Length: 452
Image 1 (cartoon, rainbow, N blue to C red):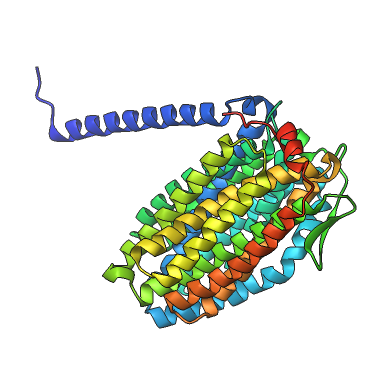
Image 2 (image 1 turned 120 degrees about the vertical axis):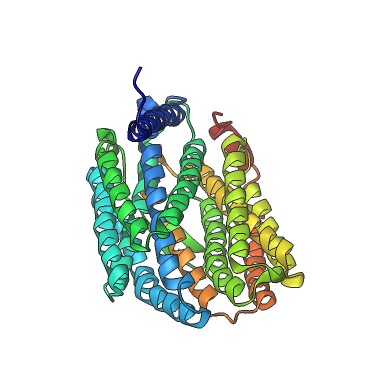
């Protein structure tokens, strides 16, 4: 028997590792597909949308990591604040003006939602490729490309929200469907951020090049959504506007519960945007508890992810008998956490605020879904979801802008945020107390338990 040479042994080991990797990947893909297609989601097409959202969130996470490394971590704190301020001015300020237009514009393409979603993926794929070149060459095209990526991402969110009602399995609630979509986004976002972090070691452009491929895959998945996504049978467009009571939906009678739930969720989303921007600079300039800024960022991001995962899990299993009460409870928790953070600023309080923010954002949004499903007529529900999502996206933008202009003082920033949340909580409690007493009974009869 001949002796096997070292190159042959290495080649054999490589082939074995490749087979093991391929087998593991296929096994993981089968398990993921079984999970996304369970409870009738495969037959209705919801499973494909869940997979599409996972791909979308992974791509967005890669872009976020790449831009953070370029605009934030790679330069001194003072310069980083200027760069991010410029980024907000060039990207978020125009979006704040355009946000009210996104929903109505997409309403005109209700008969082609698959193509609208695919277009948002293609636009982000092109933008990330341009971003990769701009980062490598330190080019000013970074900002318009980032703006295009941001607007396409927001447009995807609005269109996806309008698509969900068309893909509900028999006996499935919007709350349960959106919970499964959110869980997929949380998990895939974590995976995407991890991959981007590893690729960033080789250079800041590599996460963007991978996100280019991810968004192209998303485009294909969007085109493979069921044709009924494009159907407008039984739908009627609606509009959102503002009056003295806050956001209302015209052309249909939605009742005060939708107004209260949407306004409260707008406050929660604004606080989330504020906390993201404010803590990003605060923890770098003034490390909390003498922790390294990277460790502090990791603790806060991990707490927010745990809160979001917990809220989504609880919301998917909760019997939504009184979604307004759930909104009041999570808003109270968030207000108390922000006040405690201002009074006892430190590692524990900051982590608690991030945890509460993640919980309130996910569980509050699922409760809003329950209210819309219950109170908004089916003929206008799809359009209403698109418009409400636009307002929530705009709320995050406004909150993020506030977070970047405030002085970097933890107690001051969280104290002002807590005051804003107190005002929102008072408005929400007053609105909920004014609701008809039979509303919770109707809620229990209409929504029922979510499938597990």
